[in-house]
Length: 295
Image (cartoon, rainbow, N blue to C red):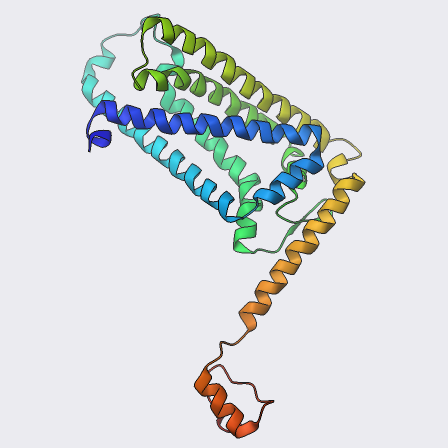
């Protein structure tokens, strides 16, 4: 297949998956911005997404994009190194037109992936995954944290001093990675004339700087809010009411699931035998023996 057998095809796959991921990162930073303006609205968005089918489809799609992007990045790196052979050791300097990020995209990608793993553990695993697996809600600062309680998980994550440090390191790596990747994906798609490449580099730099700048600002604000003495994400009356509603709804969902699991599947033949031996008040045993045998 052309997309896998040729270098151009593999670069095109990298460009398409990279473009989709850039759009997701942009959406994600805008969603996080809601938490700065209205924490309760942010929780409402978390509840709307949750473990619903559309959110699960989107999550699986994003996971597929990340995996494909990473595999093709490693594939192209190995291919390029094999093509250069030992020639890469022949020079100790690089041409001034070659960007530092261009030569270190793999390393930057590894840093971004490491940051992503931390982010998934702190948020996705405790929210969507918890709801999907129907795990019991944890307690954060003495408050029952249902999976929809996004600001409680912000409180838990950013009350740790190492969280903003890891996030800012990840954001810096992501800035370099996206700045190069933005214009590179257009170049891979054939949009590579000298005039437009310069424009795309400028657009990419501004776009990435705004997105990453917002992420850094959010991390700083979340850290300050989570470490305030009054802990507004925990003590705000509006949020407390929201947490209680989320916890009640989620616990009812868990109770309903447990009750469904306890129901013994009915078997028509078994029910007929049971009714014949014991009357209408008899319950059919799980192994489909009648009441007389069970006694």
